[in-house]
Image (cartoon, rainbow, N blue to C red):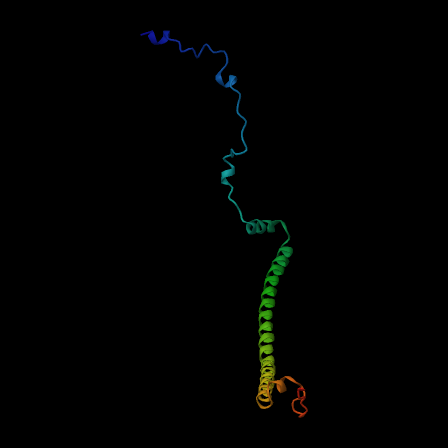
Length: 141
């Protein structure tokens, strides 16, 4: 049957293809290449370790020793500052506690003497400075 040969779809009569008529869209920055998917993210430490291959071995060892010694020195300083602060504050408490207690005791004794004077000589005698001399001023009539 020759019927299928007689029917023309019209595609062959086009002069230019649809690709030639439609402009090609520009690639966006969001589209990624398939090669980019193979690259894994590296941490900063991994990148720095990878850079050690391009430096001399002696320089790499010296930098590693410097970093290691710096960490050790920070730990030593921290430990000694903790010890020093403990010694200073505990010594201050031990040495200053008796002084504070004696000052407080002296104030309590002074308050008791003042109270005894007030009871024995009267309230005005406790306030005046010459209460023990016996020279009190009598009010005039």
